[in-house]
Image (cartoon, rainbow over all chains, first blue to last red; front, side):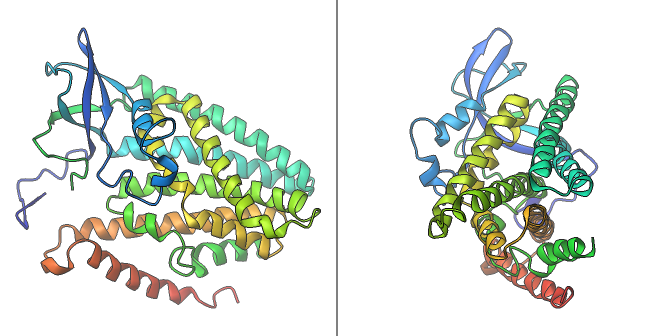
Length: 169
Length: 192
């Protein structure tokens, strides 16, 4: 961790690294809080801004609303509060592998086998489609297992300070 | 088989989509500040480029070529890519909402990634067959992901280095990117 340009020697590098982000509390139901992640300062300002827009369906705001998540409210959070939440870096990597690498691997393997066995474009395309569907089913099962272990759930780290943005680095 | 291996090495390393063809530079500089985000973006892009390469080849071979509509290839491929991204987004959301919550933010960025369109145009210009087009798309995106992760690793280390204030951040990133491109020039001629 950098502190004024000097490396902080007290940083515990053996601790599991977290991917952090800022979220805002939008609802509190009993001992659970609903949060919506905040967009980074570059969101809406990049080359995709035309595709995202700023209002309505498919926009940054609506995408973030779709990513609304629930968390146990141990810290006594109130509506409107901004908090820093985090998930383990390993969980992000594993989630990426499950979501994309598994379907891609089954798609390519089934396509390769069909091409080797039949050597016809239409059969290869059909086999790839079947492989993709199988891979998506497999990734659904693996994601369910990760979810059951609580690996995909964000953790409360601290309340965000005034002016703190998503660009935490 | 040898031809497929050469095609893979050529697309992934020799003609690397970022460092040799200079495509996808926005995401290369924007998403490589951390390794986990680079891996997330790299894998999402790999999936989309591979799927859209297959779809673009099919549209080119069965629609544009028979009706002599090649002049519409750019706009057609943009539509196919946008559809591939939407398909990926909806599928991930349906298959696993928690994964979508964690990774969905990368997907809209891929629609405007010029590397995806560049790969689609290259594969139709080289008159590849279906399996070659799929392999070319996959290899190009593997090369893209490899460079993204390498760059993210270097930038994570550079963030801890004591550099002059003038060079901190993007200037340092550009210098590292140019050195990385020089290193990749070492692959030139490997598959010739």
